[in-house]
Image (cartoon, rainbow, N blue to C red; front, side, top):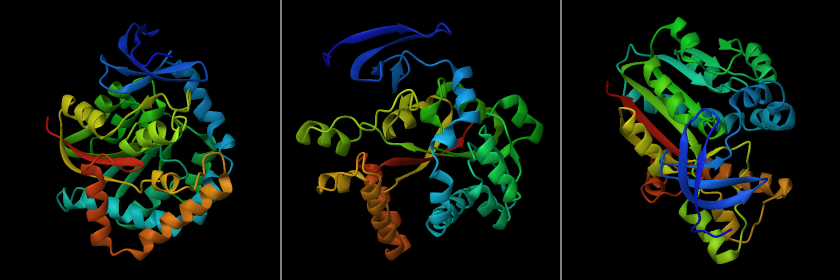
Length: 307
């Protein structure tokens, strides 16, 4: 594939897309879409087919996801408490109504409920939804949609992690999120920080294939700039940015965990120990520094609805 190829594409819903081809995998091409302002694959999958996949098959394929979440419960709870603290810092004391989109097995909602938040989630997977019921948190077993969420009124905050990369219309999703928030309400979004400087270094200097490109499961490939630009266009003010641990550090250090689940888990445990052993204030400074330089495996962005 010629890296300067410009591809034009019309999706089945009539939307026009145009951009430079970045990578090809599994019959899909990642383009730097000038129309959308972010990288995504073409052809775009059919959303109804994706909805069926996430309803029935996603967590079945990821057989270790929930069991690993249980193993990581202390580490995840530390993160979740930080996220609730950050949101609380930007909200009045009496504004504690939160929606999670893609709530998975329900651990984030459980943490929020224990902290006194009014919590509700949307989760399409039947398997994950059943786990949420065991945690006694309110979850709707559907993909998020504005009409259904409006039955619960407006929210003070909405949280989504590892969702926006999976959908065919992230612009429509975030616009519906904006409609679901009170004026001044917060969106905390976490997603893979793809085509980041360390990944590009692995590709150009060490010959790594773009392992982060996994279509059709991952449709969109956002980074700090493209997500901030999208949020600004949709009337969000960016309040804070941070990041998660740059797992690329391990790859650059010679620990190639790609395709090696055992080594991947070992690297993950090292990342956990690093975070447990760091003073929380310095850890916050570290991750905000990485975000300023567009590094980190995931971006963390908090936006405020301004109108």
